[in-house]
Length: 402
Image 1 (cartoon, rainbow, N blue to C red):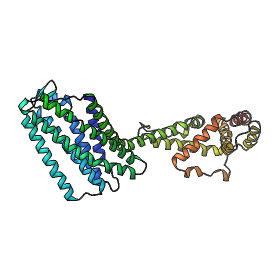
Image 2: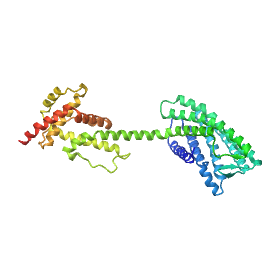
Image 3: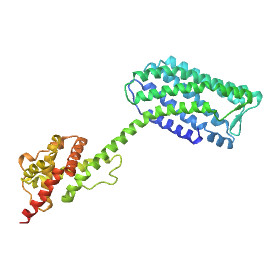
C-alpha cells in the first residue's frame, strides 16, 4: 500500500468519525460512540505511522514520537473495538465491564510503550533497528500489541455478525457486514504478525514494509473497514446527489414544453437567481419552471379555440392514439389550438367556467413536474398534435387577419 494511499484512507476514517458523531441509530448510542473513537484512532494512527511521517520526524530527530503516539492510538483503537463489542451486546455496557477493559488497555499501553523505549530503536533506511541485546524488548512490544489486538477483534466478530443478521435491509446492515468481514481480515492480519516477531528476534529490525501476504491482508482489512464506515458516510451524500440529479432531470424534461410556451408568451419568465442549479437552488429552479408553465396554461385558457375538438377528432381518425394517451392528447390539443391563436395575436376571450380547474396545482412538485413532462412529450412527438397544430395554424391566421 503506497504512502499516499495510507493518508487517503486515514482521511476516510477521520471524516467518518466526524460523521458518526452526528448520526443517531436507535439503541446504538454507545456503539456509535465507540465506533467514532475507533475510526478517529485508526485514522490518526495511519497518519502517524505512515513512512512519510516517520521519515519527516527522523529529520527532526524525533523518530520515536510518531512511533509511540501511533502505537498508543493503535491500542486505543483496539480498546474501542472491545468496548464496541460490549455495546453491541447491550445498549449501554455495564460500568464494571467498561472499567475492566480500561484497566486492561491501560496496562497493555503502558507496558508496550515501556518496552518500545527500552528497545531504543533508531531509523535506518526506513526500518527501526535496535541492538541485538535489546531485540527482545522489540519482540515483547510487538507481542503485547498483537495479543491485545487479537483479543479485541476476536470479541467483536460475533456481535457484529449478530447485528448484521438482525438489521433490516439498508445502510446499517451493509455497514455491519463490511465491519464483520474487515474484522475477520484483521484477525488474519494480526495473526500473521508472528512473522514480524520472528524477524525481530533474528535480525533486531522492525521492518517498516510488509511482505506480500501481510500487505494483502492489511489492505483487505483496512479497505473493508473503510468501506463499512464509508457506507454510513456516503449513503446520505449519495441520496442528496440522486435527489439533485432527479430534480435536474425533471427540470430538463420540461424545457421543450416551456420553450414552446415562452416563444409565444415571454412574459411568463420569472427572474432566475444566480447559481440556480446549485445543491440548494435546483429544487427552487424546478418549482419556478413549473409555475411558469402553469401561468402560460392559465393565460392560454383565454385563447381556447372551440374548433379544436373538431380538428382533434379529424386527427385521431387519421392517427389513432393508444387508449392510455387519449386524455393527454386531448389536453395537448387544447393547448396547441390556444397557443396558435395567441401566436397570431388573437384577442383573448373569457374561458369556460369548467375549464378553470387547477387540480394539478395541488399535486406534489415532483408529481406535477412529471405530469407536465408527459404532456410536453405528447405535445412535441404526437402526430395527432402535429396535425392539430398545422390545421390551427392554417385556419386561425386568415380568420384573425379578417
